Amino acid sequence: MAEIFTVIKKEKRMQKEVGADTVLDAGLLTSYFPILFFSFLKRCPSYTDPQNLTGVSEFLLLGLSEDPELQPVLAGLFLSMYLVTVLGNLLIILAVSSDSHLHTPMYFFLSNLSLADIGFTSTTIPKMIVDIQIHSRVIAYAGCLTQMSFFVLFACVDDMLLSVMAYDRFVAICHPLQYRVIMNPRLCGFLVLLSFFISLLDSQLHSLIVLQLTCFRDVAISNFFCDPSQLLHLSYSDTFINEMVIYFMGAIFGCLPISGILFSYYKIVSSILRVPSSGGKCKAFSTCGSHLAVVCLFYGTGLVGYLSSVVSPSPRKSMVASVMYTVVTPMLNPFIYSLRNRDIQSALCRLHGRLVKSHLLHPFCYMG
Image (cartoon, rainbow, N blue to C red; front, top):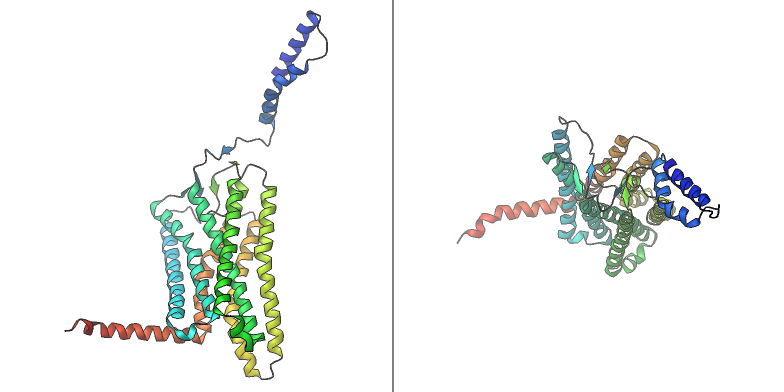
């Protein structure tokens, strides 16, 4: 920048020699303003050369561990957990769809929750397993954006369906005589579609926010999937407005469902405590036990993951928390409902009996 001022002094001295005005011409300063500006930026300590969005064609997922000996163990562990998750949730869907005794609003919402859990897990785990097998951690920019969109979509669907299921339990316990009238098939279908469209809106808003990021400090994501918060932290541009928008959406799509769940259970507990018999209280609590356990698991692990990413500077702890709510929670949901729900157990037993019977009768189908 000193060279620029030297040139300006020479121009000023030449003006004095020719008898020109001693005041520096404004046009001279304007002509050198771009050079001064970029010279100042290069001397600024906070200035770094960003990577433009047009130059960022892929990101690097750091994964859970860089130890090559640990990679086969992680691949086998997550493959087994993914298979258990998919098979467990598929069994719930098959049991609900094949048994007429379970064609009720509660199990209709449960089957949709299982479907959302399958999508939620399939968004992240298969990609991580394939990356371990082919020894690659690279994900394309379009693939990262797609993964983030589906991750937010299915996470929000889980969130909304849990609040809808809490409302269903509230109507069943607090208004049992009007339950079939209120929770009719049309309303149940509308609530599921509304949950999906609200989640789709949240997902698209996250995608639009990421698309507005014009440059990044780095392309390394400290996680095994494209976490939206990680992409915002990697951005070189000012993300204050984007973070405020995300926090506002989190308050709407997070706090409102939680408030609805808490209010529903407040009314449920108040209604159960007025039941005179202890047997009636136990039966009422048993219908809510599985849902309450899933709610605590989902929001508990999600809250731990959020707090660990905000409070703890260690990316390793944040990734462990991400595993809890992206892998462990969808895997445990079928076990919670099947172990605590006799209707699901009976439906699974009847489904197993029908499968065994059809298998025994199968050879006779080809006789004659």
